[in-house]
Amino acid sequence: MCTYSQLYKGAYTGNVVERISVDNTLFSKTQYTAGNNEGGFHCHENSHISFVFEGGDIEKNKRESYERKAGDIFFYEAGEPHETIFRSQTSKNLNIEFESTFFSRHEISSNQIDVAINKNPDAKFLVLKILQELDLCYSNSHETIKFLILELCFLGKQCSINRPDWVRQLAEMLNDRWDEQISLEELSIALNVHPVTISKHFRKYFFCTYGEFMRKLKVERSVSLIRRSKMPLTEIAYSCGFSDQSHFTRSFKGFLGFLPKDLREMQ
Image (cartoon, rainbow, N blue to C red):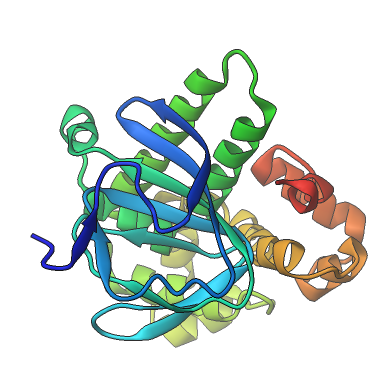
């Protein structure tokens, strides 16, 4: 139980400008005012995802302080205390709040969503697809959003399966060196695992090919640059390791279903 100020269902320290409810899940576009530090620790009644799509802030929990920038995604457990200690500019977040009944209905845990958010780049892509559906407001958007959020939950189940230590080490290595071309032989030596074992089991644990996974990591990095900066898309493509803008655009649309310029224009 949270011993700090508790915000109940649908309540945030910012101003909710748009909200829909789908399948015991509340999706809230929330705007936070520059200079408003919200004064002290608070917690939320329900677990929620917070995706920063404009601006940012510095937050603090019981262990550390950390910066949240546009393009970043975070997960907060129900009752987890945190506070905003500095906000220099107006920020906009998409908050996705899960009622407790959601977890029991779909036989998943909040920890599985936490794992997906922190371990799988597809989680951010799914949240961005949800954000675009909210902007499009098609007649079937609610059903589409329901499919997307359940797909995100399935990612958490996938990431929660027991994995050998070398798989965890491989994931960390690829995330740390996402902008490098690492050979299978180098991976084998670093992990002390036979190259055939790595290549044979890569899809089993990462659910895609090695090349696809590396492109996902590059596209994931581009999301932050698109939302945080005014860099030309061509420059962003090169910064994220693509040979040209066309390859970047094709990969981006392949994973997200829309174009980089659409993300830049997203409100």
